[in-house]
Image (cartoon, rainbow, N blue to C red):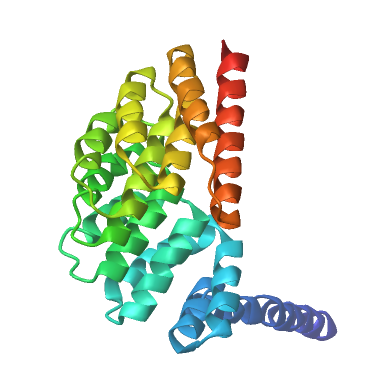
Length: 271
């Protein structure tokens, strides 16, 4: 009986030892994991300290995490005060393209004084392509900074919402910056609304810059309205009549004619 009692006690003791060995380290390990920073948090910390090429490398790693990094990026964005870091976080969110970031970005731009940050937000929203950003992008067309206006026009084209056409046309006539005007023309071409071809005809007739005219022709070709064919043929005839002596100007004229021919072929294909 004595031996049996000690045998039972020994078995119980052994079971207790096995329990402690198997489960206590596991519990400790899980608690430790909760205290460890996530990969996203670690990379964001690196981003804060990065310079030059390191910023691009760290950004690429965060982008590769995709949706898993978005929550951490948004949290860091609300806490960030340094312009360089805020710009990088917004840029990364745009590259990831998660619609989870839309509300935070549209709120962030409301009182933003820095044009660089506003530009990055507009650019990111253009990549995310969430209809909830529509009003912010339209407002961006009136931003005091030309680069922000340009990005807003391109973003509206990417959004593919034809409700943007009225706003794009409204700012086109008063816009002085050619880069912005070209972005608006490109957006109208992307949106492919035949109601806009008359506006583009006016731009083709009223502007002198050949580069700008080329962009207008490309947009007309993208829209694909057969009513544009006589206008384009007439414009091509005028180009063919130019006989410049300068080789560079002659080259530019020939390139412009090629662009017109391409637009005509596109329209004829649709027709």
